[in-house]
Image (tube, rainbow, N blue to C red; front, side):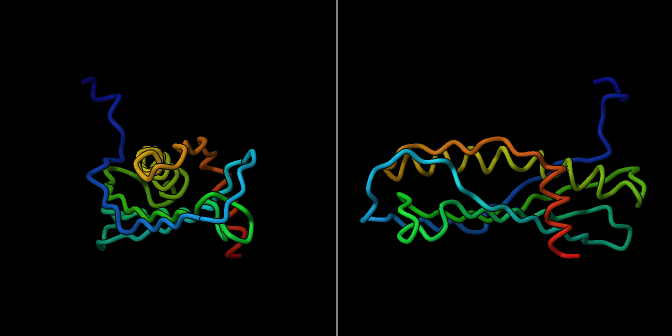
Length: 142
């Protein structure tokens, strides 16, 4: 591959930390809009900040019984990334944004597969605007 196409961010691996699924036996069938919340957590593991863990915590259809959702599902996944030649000032705008963008499709696939195998209609999460996610989360913290 042409070296100019290589990114300063390498995706090493990911781990599914937890999946929690609860069926709402009282669900009354109705048209639904997908309701989910996502939080991200970033941790740098070494003194040079070259290894980064990005954890995404997704909660889908929270309070299923109260809100008449068919189920509730929470998924927590951590991705392991390495940074090469990424300046400290570019870490949030480049590395963290791109790491979330890389990791989220794995969660989408996991949710689709899990719900299909749980004998509920398969749920396909919509794509997200990662920049808006990070801005909204940063605004909640500040």
